Amino acid sequence: MGLALRIKFSSFLWRYGFLMIIFFMFVWWRDIIREGTYEGQHTRQVQKGLRMGYFYLLYLKIMFFFGFFGALYLLYLKIMFFFGFFWGVLPLKF
Image (tube, rainbow, N blue to C red):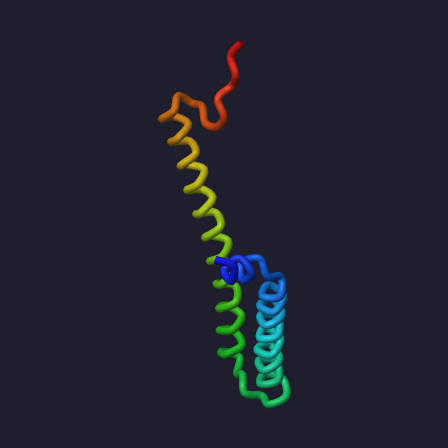
């Protein structure tokens, strides 16, 4: 149990993971820019596909956000209706 707690609350792993993500993003974008700009490997169709793919990824993330929190909100409404339009700590009656 001690090792699990050390891993769970280790700030080193968070920092290392975050830095690795930033590093791989930088290297990937560097390669994409180098291939398209200096080596001329990207035709107009490939450039358009890369742009559309990136915007599609952003669109999917936004739709997932709205879908997830929309479902959470509907669940909240359903629970409120089930418990008599009241959810949370019961008020004290004196």
